[in-house]
Image: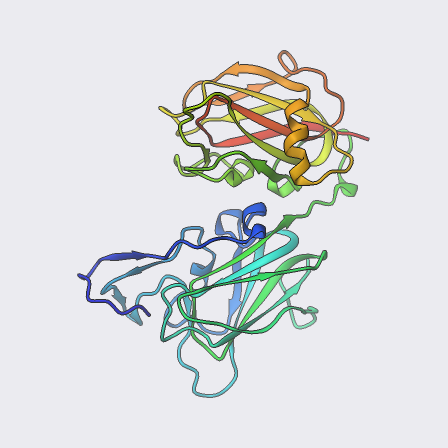
Length: 346
């Protein structure tokens, strides 16, 4: 734990860190907000394992103690005196292909685990004695008060992870970055689907600015809880407009669009528009240029503050099957959620 002479109650934030590409391109499947849960753990005497899944960055509060000792913002087990090691099993918020991990020991200094490994499994319910676990990350040395980013090259879909720490100690956060998986083969082809949602396989491909907030929340469930739960760009001082490109979980004929400016009042966009196209093969980088020339699915529309805007057949333009959309804000501002509904393209 951190050592400091600061006054009791002082909150120390975790230092900023440069994120690898997988952490900026993919959502955190172990996010508490997406429904991730700790199924079981061998011990959590000092601090609950559920804290590892919190979306907020970990903090250290000087002089804060509880009945078990120093309060720590993460999972912390007691000191092992009988051999073995501690484990925590996590059910991901969404099944998906894992592209990278971050085992974060921020603020754990003399009480971090010297090593950790990660196993993965796919099961419909919770794991049991018959569950087959696959080693995703072999035992890896850890440092205190540090991020440990690990690239994963495996295209299998997983539902659960088992974090093993050797032999004991504390982990502030476990981030599991990946692409949510959705089995469209079992879907009714005539139904209307929200294909932009993370649960449907929607993905943020690219964006031009995220100074005040990442676009990742755009595809999450529910309405934004505050202005920080959305995408917000800096104030534009030059010509042009801000944009985000979204890959839909399945190509559709678009029938309904929602642009939600919840909590954005003095900083909502003046206007929005949506372009779309059916992309057969491309790289994320080349899509940035291609998207400039996609036809409009929704022409420019005036927006209002703190409001859900719904656009249907009366204003939507025929565009045929669409697999990607580019949402434009004019000239800048903030959007809480984007939702694209459509019927599956055959």
